[in-house]
Length: 133
Image 1 (tube, one colour):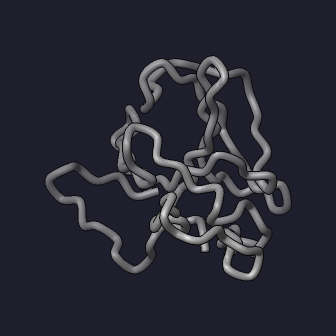
Image 2 (cartoon, rainbow, N blue to C red):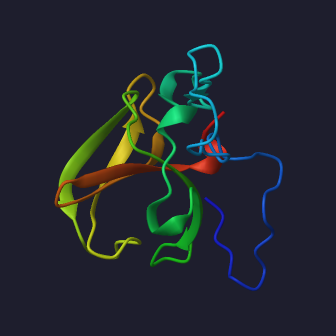
């Protein structure tokens, strides 16, 4: 993975996070025909659906650097049945205050896709934007 600094970051506009346009109360309900799937870019396995998009801390998309300076652009989803988590939950270096995280992998091919974040009854998946399609 490429390590860059905040000063040299070039945003990736080639892909929009699935579910970025979230349904509001005045919009009609999503039907299965319009509820598009979100897939693993490596193997095309179904991970979740656009209707599962959530906005923790007020945004569906988040950009973070890990302690090593690696940039991650995340899209957030309430559920991701195609993602399996591993390891014990950790709060160390959590990008979401008060949340613990576990690493998430594609159930089909094992590609690292992001993290599962949880905190006292609330949980969501932060999936790496460039690993989704």
